[in-house]
Image (tube, rainbow, N blue to C red):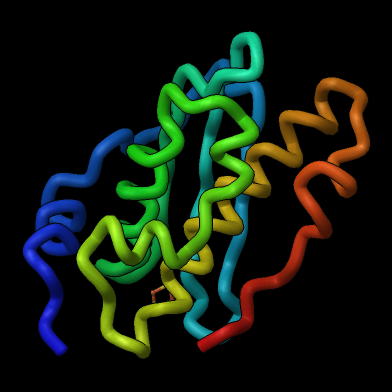
Length: 139
Ligand code: FES
């Protein structure tokens, strides 16, 4: 299966790339099988994700899914960002080849990890809100 135009676009022109020095939450996740790493930064005001950025050391699909995930949560309430699934990221990119599905899982987990970190920094236990952090080891 070839990559969709949207995947190629988000790979070639990723949105929201870079570190954020004043992030309210930072999440880093990795896949132990492929070795790819994704880092997400979020800024939160009044329960809204006002800004989001990422740094991904990984494959093209990891970059495209990171980019799309940031676009899908930017400006959204935390509640909505928590509902973001890797399936939604894939659909927004018009699909991914089966061997690249785990790249979108990483994007979902990176957003959740950043939200967990945000709650921890607020002194709130994130587990009941975000769920348990899990290692991404799907291939
Ligand atoms: Fe592992 Fe894409 S090959 S994140």
